[in-house]
Image (tube, rainbow, N blue to C red; front, top):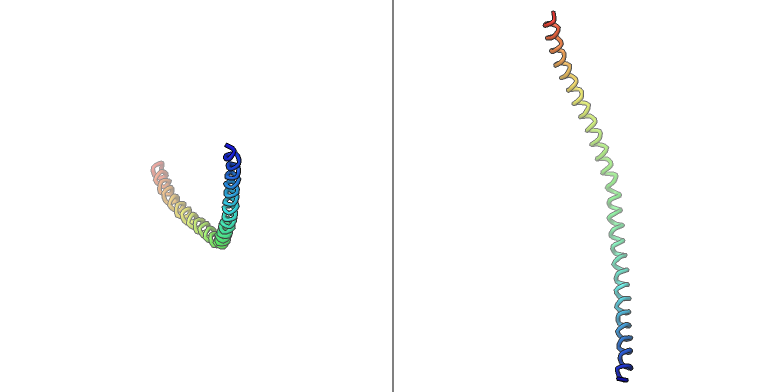
Length: 97
């Protein structure tokens, strides 16, 4: 019994030291991995920032094209409405006379 009381704390301390060393190694590897991930994220962020100008130009262009097509459609619709209503008005005037 005395042997277990002397030997068991030594085994527990030895295992705790091993777990501490493994924890330190894993912590260092985790820090290195996070630094690599941070570099990749910064690189992707830089590339996205360079594309923002391009996307802004595309957005501006599509807005202007949409505005121009809206104007063309409005003009055609107003001409079409004038033609339809002028014929209806002429028919109503002839019928009333």
